[in-house]
Amino acid sequence: MPDDRSTPTKPNARKPAPAGVRPEIEAFLDRVKALGPAATAGKRGRLIFALDATMSRQPTWDSACALQADMFREAAAIGGLDIQLVYFRGLSECGASQWVADGDRLAALMARIDCRGGHTQIGKVLAHARRENEKQRVQTLVFVGDAMEESIDALCAAAGQLGLLGVPVFMFQEGDDPVAENAYREIARLSRGAYCRFDTGAAAELGELLRAAAAYAAGGMKALRDLSARHARGAQKLLAQLT
Image 1 (tube, rainbow, N blue to C red):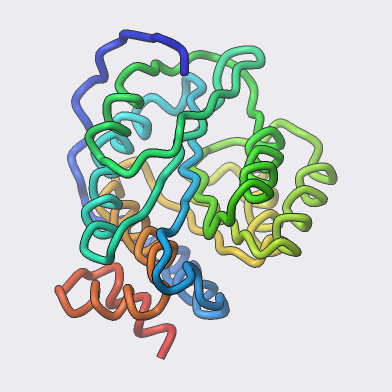
Image 2: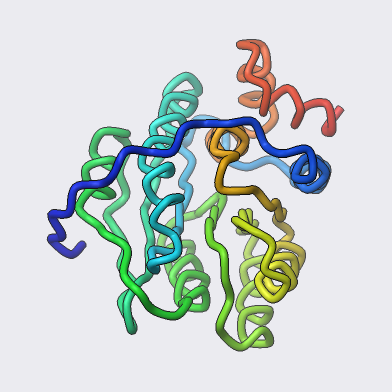
């Protein structure tokens, strides 16, 4: 990882999602019901947490620095989850951290990265996920971004390959860019994953979905039921679609 020492700004306050965003979130939860079991019983799950770190992503990056801790808290209650941070920024920089099992360690890695102007590199993220899965099973790839500036055909081909390998991609889109939405939906569909849109002020909703994704990666349906029993709204909504 680059040794960037920039200090992150204060995360955005978590606000409920606007009413217009709720149908997108419900559609995401509905899509997840088609997914099968994630982690194998007795084994730690592995989740790749990929973020667009170009300049327009600065507000969401700061929120993600706080939200990632929620994923580890849920995974710890299940039995463990290893997470790898992947990001892209600048002209051609696309970096990946080591696999970490500690929320504080991942937060420290994220704090060393600042956002820089540049084009999207989603194709590199998908290719990286495939390589990591060849080394050891990856249960889920979660991507958070707001744009797409690449060949849609190339991205669809890479997403289809992940689908065949059993690596679903959860595509979380900030904003309403139609080009990004079309690409994100196709990546999710072809990888047998799920798509959801959220607004900048909907950090609480994103946090719910990230916790549910972590629970799914670490322990499948049983983990989601346990999370729901602790009155977690995101897991309760997810289970309502699955049962």
